Image (cartoon, rainbow, N blue to C red; front, side, top):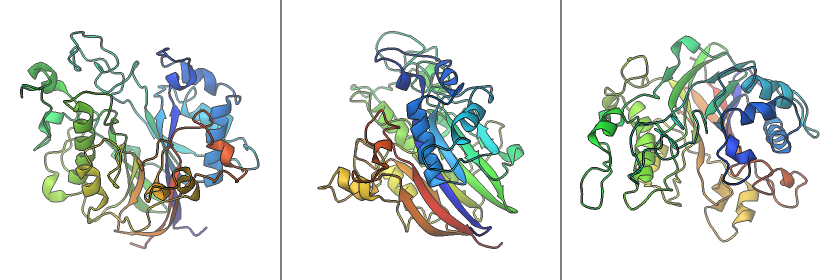
Length: 374
């Protein structure tokens, strides 16, 4: 591999407590650490196996519970699973990683779902979840992270987005109380801008995981939030529209117009118009003039999974939709190759994705990039 060739990948790994518990059990932040203490959990072993087959240099894990102590969280995953060969795949190591708090499971003092109860959990949390940090995310890298220049937008207020899409009750009044709306964060988890130093070149990794646009009612509050969470990136990449944005340190503005970037994550929205999302935002982002979408990742396994669907080759989730994206910038980057890890049924590796419990309901999505000289 040349010094400037780098593979970026995103993988929603479903490594949150409820995934490992009987249906109806809510779980908490102690479940995943307990499973990472050794190398024996079969679903996590399969996830590690998939990562080792793909061998990404930079990897985003969505739905990896926030664990404050890395020795019990991401370092344990690296040490006990990624550093140990799974099957015939070679071990892989990531000396650098970034993670932080997210809004999922963070209790609000309001009745956000308007069911007459204030529970502080589930749909009454600032992002849907039953404990703080559920459905968190982690960025892993073989290249150094410029931690001093990381920008997070966990606490950016939705009300401060110009032209936000309003959520209304059937009578046309505001869905959220004025008190709740004053505090409501846009991001259901967080939005991150994580700069990497790749052989002296800076690449901004733009990370998020917007809320699923379902599990609500006619008001479509989750669909509306998903739309605006994705639209945030459209504005962040558009200097004429980004002045309103502020990060968690109060620094204003978006991404410099000449910067290299790779935007990654489970966006829970299909650019092909499938599913329940409001698709305008993902289509605008996908077709942004700064983004190279010329080689959409695909797989033979996804085409086989839904043979009568012309979009199936590009699906990234077992529930038959393209939801996960790795979108590089046109500036400073050449797109060389891309794919989705989804083997066909006849492939010996198919059992890694053959059922919901084998690994995840999402597939690993990767792109191979070459960084041009400055």
